[in-house]
Length: 315
Image (cartoon, rainbow, N blue to C red; front, side, top):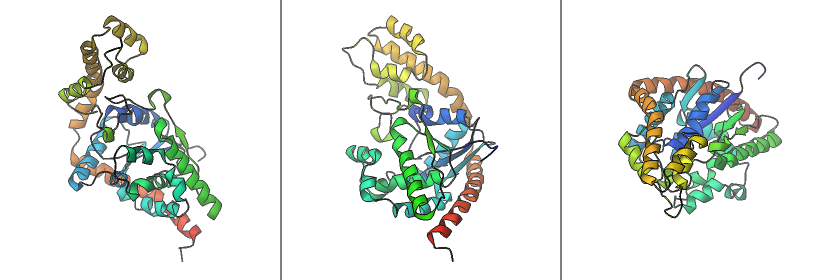
């Protein structure tokens, strides 16, 4: 749109407590990107149903993740925060995309294969997840989708869904681009794998100091090496490599001291945000989400009116 900021879209599942991987991989860069772009932040509550089946937990998590966005510094003058379930156009468009792509195409999804390999139930929602994500993105004339390196394929799937619809029914959807921060594309967890709630290897973003300390002290270390690789990989998110080289060279083999230094550096970043978060009430969150839903649906409904007309269901 000429003369306007480019539109950025991202979402987070309310499937549990956010961790520092979410912060460095999504929240922090998003807060920075909102300074230059329009923003839509979606709480992906329907996506969460692929793995979370506890209604009370999901309800509480929705409130929690909204507070996380606000505490991380999201500027509501340039961002819309809303719940996926408040905009039914998402699931409607996802069904239309499901009817355009093939089963073999969806079987290529890396995230699906990885999650099933890790023991998650292979439910149909998990299988068709990429088309709901495609709908999330494409409803809003999105220009940029910030994702981790491991999620690049989701944006590729969104472009494919857009292309298939455009070929079948005429030019309708803009094909979005992804924005990957290579330095933190995949944040390692306490076991060295990607940090993920599914893998139970996280360091909680807004946890207490004791909770953060417990998680850091559980980081797997290689006793045969001079430098604990997993500790160092996480520590690089908080300090420059020049600073860390001096610290780690001085404390070769002293993993306890290095983990304590990491705890202190995490706490220095997290404590001010935790204080802001504690001051946000549930009622304030509900008001933000209500306002956000109205703004998001105003955009989505226009796109879906065009889609319905083009596929032939509008009389």
